[in-house]
Image 1 (cartoon, rainbow, N blue to C red):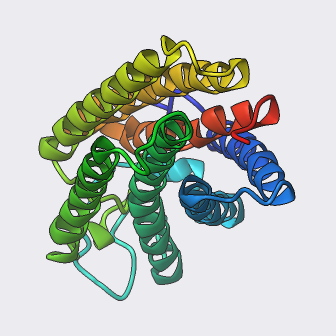
Image 2 (cartoon, helix red, strand yellow):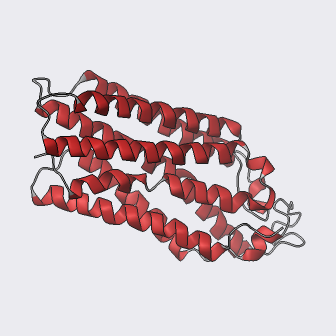
Length: 277
């Protein structure tokens, strides 16, 4: 059965999401630098921005995928590690390129997404700080610690599972399936994190002393959190049912993680219309 979408089409869709995120975040950081008001939320966004640029360039420059990779059986075990298995299009050089691509696309997205959430958390705290006598609310430290813990857990689990064995290096798809646990952690973490951020934003919206420009910022946060939750659920579901996806496994998982990443651009765009001066 052929893939549901061609490789060129999936790459075009993936890169369009990344370029949207990169452009929006560039405007955000440019504006903050221009007014000389860079803060910790901007530095977190900068870190996510750098990783997203690297991720987009990796996808753009990668030539290791071809349509045959998804048309042939996805998990043919290689008996000769100096060459591809019977029926596999992978050469040693192509296989090595896919391994590098897997580690970049498998670890960068989680780091980018949770750095972006930390940036959102600090942006909300920044508004709260400007209207209270408290420098940094306690909930900010708690949320940052929780977000870092979840993001670290997702990356650590993938590294732990996939680094223990190189058997997946010698399969057609060159994909390491972490298992359902990663999907459950992703869905739970995404929904809880976005629900908390949305609730905090909603609480601040009803403060009488919040300026109109700050209310616009908080309104954009609602949109970013909703988009993030939907993308996170999509990725989690794909990870949970990965073993049942058959030959479409690789393109589906790849697309789901690349849709999940660029929500950083969704909250970057609100800085085009309002500032935290």
